[in-house]
Structures are given as C-alpha cells and as structure tokens.
Image 1 (tube, rainbow, N blue to C red):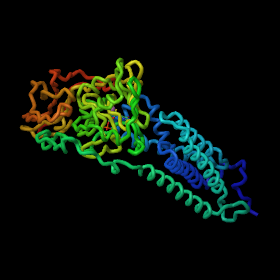
Image 2: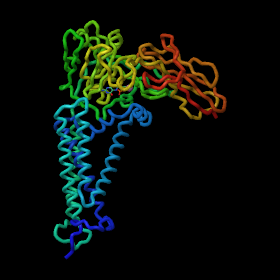
Image 3: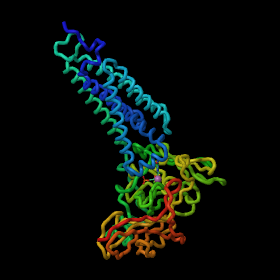
Image 4: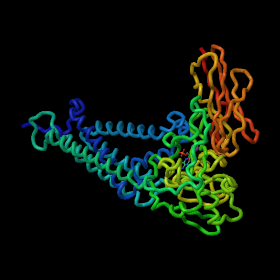
Length: 521
Ligand SMILES: Nc1nc2c(c(=O)[nH]1)N[C@H]1C(S)=C(S)[C@@H](COP(=O)(O)O)O[C@H]1N2
Ligand SMILES: [Mo]
C-alpha cells in the first residue's frame, strides 16, 4: 500500500522535490484575494469609506514622512496614488507567494500572513480620522474569510499526491483545481461588485445647477497664446491638476451632504445642498496652485467656478469678535486653516458647486469645495467640505501645518516657460518663447525673458480677464546657432519683481527663475 506522503512529514522532507508548491502559492494568493475582495464587498454594503485595502493605503499616506511624500509627487506627479497602489499590490503578492512556499506542511505561515494583514487593516481603520465603529465590520469579515479560504485550500493542496497511486486522504488534482477556480471567481465577483456599488453613488450627473447669475461666460478672446505653445486660458476639467490625500475619492451624495458652521459664531448653522444652492451665486475664474509646485512645474490650473461667497455663509452664522481664521474639514477628515481676511475682503472666495458650467467633478470636491483667489490650495481649497469652524490662529493647527508647512499660504508671484521646452532644439534665427505667469488676486503687470547674460526683454502679455487667474505671455527671440539659456521673471501689479533666489517648496512655496537650456541649429 502506498503511504500518502503529504500527511507525514519525514526527516528527509527538505530533500524531497517540492512538487506541490504551485498549488500552495495559488492557495495563498486566493486566500488573500478572497479576503480583499470580500472586504471590498462588505465595505460597499455597510460602510463605503471602510475598504480594508484602501484603509491600509490611506494609513500609509498618513505615516509617510514629508520628504518621501515630496519625492513621490516629484517622481509620479498626479500619478502618486497609482504608484502607491501598484507598490502595495507588489508587496502583497511578494509576501503572499513567500507564505505559500513556506507553508510546506504546516499551514501556519499562511495563517500568520492572513491574520497580520487583517490586523494591519484593523489598525489602519481605527486610526483613520473618519473612524466610526461600523468601519470594523469589513476588515473583520475579511480576516475570517481569509482564514477560512486558506485552511480549506491549503488543506486540499497538501493532500494532492505526487503520484497517482495515492491512498486514503488524498485529494485529486481536479478537486483542488475546481475549488480554487470557484474561489477565484467568487473573490473577483465580490471585489468587482464592491467597487461598482461604491462608484455608483449618486454623483455629479444627478445634480442640476442654477444658471450662472450673468449667464454662461465665454472664454475671453486673446486670453491665451495657444498657437505659440501656452496652455489654454481655461483648463479642461479633465486636465485640471489634482492633489489630495484621498486614495479613493470620497463619493458623497447631495442628499446626504450638509455643511456645519460653528465655533466663534452667534448661532450655529447647518446648510443642506439645496439650501446652499438657493443662496446668492457668483461665477468667477480662479487659478488654483499647489504649494508643492516646483519652479517650472505643472501643479497649476485655471477654472471658472460657480458658488456661494464664503462671507455670505459666515454672515448667516455671525462671526464673533476675536475670530481670526476658519478651520475647514472634508468628508475624508483632511483639514486646513484659512485666515478670515481673504474670505471677507470682497474677493471671490467661494463655496463652489460648479466648475466650467458643470457640477464639480468628484475628484475636485463634489458636491462642494472652497476656492480662495490668492492662496495656495493647502490653506484654502478644501474639497468635499462638510465643516467650518470659526476659530483663532492659536486654537487650530491644520493637517499640513502639523507637517511643517507654513500657517499662511499666499501664492508667490511666479512664471514659467512652456516653449521652448528644456533641452529642446530650436531653429537658429527667429523663435517664439511663450508661457504663463501668475500672482492671483494681485495680477501680473510684466513678464521679462533674458537670454544667456543678456538684458531682460519685456514679453507681450495676453488679455487679462481677471487678476485672479494666470496670465499668458510670449516673446519672439532671435537666437544665434549654439547653446542658450532662457530665464523668465514676472512683476506683479503691486510692483514686486519675482525673486531669483532659489527656495524649495516647503514651507511656503518654491522660488527662483524658471530656466530652460536650448540649442539653436
Ligand atoms: N479634502 C481635501 N481637500 C484638499 C486637499 C486634500 O488633500 N483633501 N488638498 C489641497 C491641496 S494641497 C490642493 S493644491 C488643492 C488641489 O485642488 P485640485 O485637486 O482640485 O486641483 O486641493 C486642496 N484641497
Ligand atoms: Mo497643494
């Protein structure tokens, strides 16, 4: 009678060729996959924000040191989140394969893996700023499913004999493959349904916006030099730069949304979306910039926003004497501080509900976000906003301020060369340089370009539809054959000339003249 080898570890175990390793690796991958898939499904059903997989990624974002975050943005730009998710999947696959290989007879390595991943998800969930007890259900169920699937599949995998003449307790290859296949289908289905349900929340398509008070504003003629290589004055919403700490975009429905205004106010106010939408609306172009934008960087875009002036909402609540700033919080627990000055001095600071004649895109804050001309996004542009607390400078320190960024983030007067690109080859003789300059809410008065050690030459400026938006420039140049350096600097309407002193973006915005090296041939 043949002895079912799989049941009996022998002294020479390690010398025996490890024939079943493919099955064990498959068992481990399927156990982890089923755990993640079911986690997604349960999250979609009970607590949409509590996907265990994304909770871990979100926890990683919270724990990432500032220098690494900056490096990630510098390397991957707007794809920083995709990079994180791809990295997470790679790490999970690697340790899962390892656990499968190690679980030769003993199921414990795989068990440790599934439980450790579950614990990680539980910790990430509990420490999230938006944690609610119900959020424990998805990671809890995910761990149990992972344990169950692992024990089942590992148990079958190690009982598939190496030789066909197996005895009692043996499991046919076919039985293992069928069980594994069904598990794979179930895990994929659970994960897919979970994602689809989460993504299906009533979004921008469900919202009708009131018309802009002055009717749809056309893009002013002559506001850009697209033919010469500048961006279009109005950024297409799909091209609008995106920066936030949300691994998965909060998907809010207008029916559930509300904004609470409290703190140093005469009376606390809570507004529904319909109430906000029926208040006095303004429509205005505002160029948003990220404080992390490097000299010459692309974290800047211009939109036409429709919204309610922040000061009108504050007036409903009645700001008390002594108040200095507001703390605004988003549905996903991010927050920032904004001084009351720019919110109440008459500029177009607003709680925006629309971007370019449509409801806000989900990625840009649907259903309501704040926009304040002249301030970097990290101190003003709260997306998915749900809470405003009127407070003092001393009483509130924001998410980014805690991580070393400045308390006040006025936009620094800056400029960029869009063409020619750095390292480009250009025809000798006449060539046109073009780009953008910005000093939101102050306005751009002049842009100058210097070639090599030559003098600053004034560039032609495009029409200026608003001082709250960027301004395009262009300048024909005559270049002798050979290498050249082009530098640009702007002067704003307060008379301040953009500084050439180089500074990093942390703590309050990069400075220095954008410079490109070109070769004329
Ligand atoms: N809820 C939330 N709002 C946020 C952020 C965030 O991380 N979470 N990032 C801010 C930063 S740093 C910037 S630069 C702007 C970017 O806005 P956009 O993605 O619409 O371009 O959003 C701001 N609002
Ligand atoms: Mo930012």
